[in-house]
Length: 67
Image (cartoon, rainbow, N blue to C red; front, side):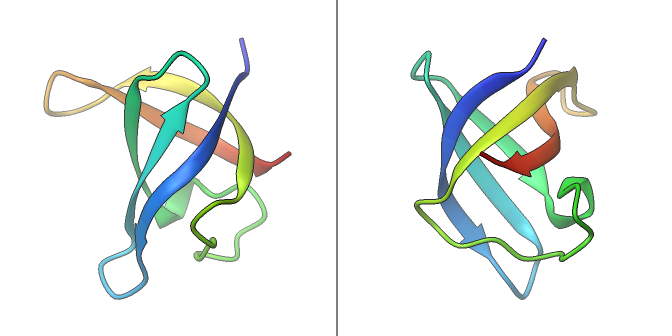
């Protein structure tokens, strides 16, 4: 199921970011899950994404696509 949200933070050097979902939850992500392969995305960009269980026991965004 695709969720909708907005990129709240993104660190180009580390490739780490966070999406605020429409549900108000925060979903961390790594640049490798940006579907177009660009490895970068601007803060404030509206996105669609999947949610997967992360390695730290919390939900993470995956398959991030610009909406």
